[in-house]
Image (cartoon, rainbow, N blue to C red; front, side):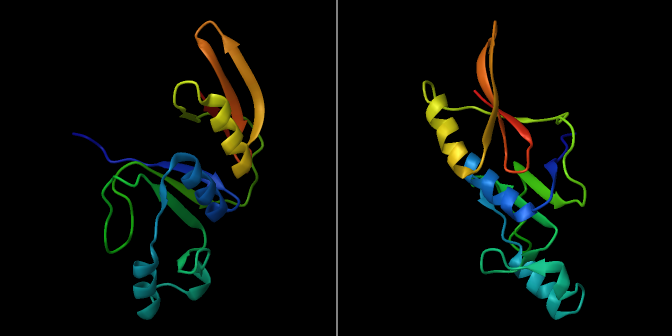
Amino acid sequence: MTLHWKVVIDAGDPHAQADFWAETLGYLVEDNSALIEELLAVGAVPEAATVEPHGHRAWRDLAAVRHPDDPYEEKSGTGLGRRLLFQRVAEVKTVKNRLHLDVHSAPGQREAEVERLLGLGASVLRIVEGPGGSWQVLLDPEGNEFCVH
């Protein structure tokens, strides 16, 4: 049996994180507005549970990005393939991630990719040179580590 999965990342601002990672990976921010409007219309969710970060309704405490080539559920806008879900949490990040993403640039393009990511709000934590190769460890806007190869 194959299981369906997604990576869930705690965030102080899930919508800002979704925007950063959508730009970083070339993914799409999921549009859940049709489902949200339907749930609002029947009183199933309060308006306070929503925001309008891109001119349409979104969940206040959740935002997700999905690969543009993967299937998604038409009614809810939820991706059915490769996706990252950002959920709002009250506490800030205080320790090193136990899990991180690796971003692979095109051959010979790592420095250009790092510069692009810095322009999106990332910062460089360190450069790693080792027997297996070299890469850069960056921080996303909320301080989550990820590597650029």
